[in-house]
Image (cartoon, rainbow, N blue to C red):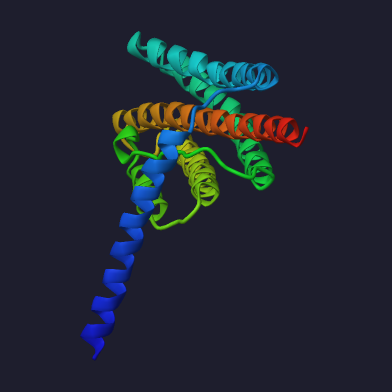
Length: 227
């Protein structure tokens, strides 16, 4: 009896997975991620702000790795701490942006399809696992809006994990509490993953703005039909 229940549950999940994949491919063929002029301006403005803030951390990290190679460890650690302080401000700002996107996604009648995160794009094992979870759950959700909000949730959790990992590595290096080489490699991996998370967040923003633009176009077309 139990094996029959298990088989039925597994079959149901498989059917849901296949249906979701088929529906997702059909929806993707119908979408063109075109932004309105206003949406394009908003996207560029937010993109410039996000990338400029992230660039401050990159400058600090570039300096830290460079002077470390030259043997100036004190200066390297100072710049490393500067980079963490920038991320300490940057990460909450990204979480607020993701939260706002989730709210606006509930106002969209039809959400543009988004791809799940890819584990191979991340170097931290924790973030790769989060991306794998996103891929798994993505195909069992029915609507594009649910998949979009799942993506935002995973990105938000990943920003938190990356920030905490950076804090631990920075504190260990400043305190000389563990092998330095291993921690510097960890910082390099975290830096890479912050770049991936930022890019994926901006892709999500573009999908949201495209959805809003498509909704406006549909409204205009509907008004023309009524006339």
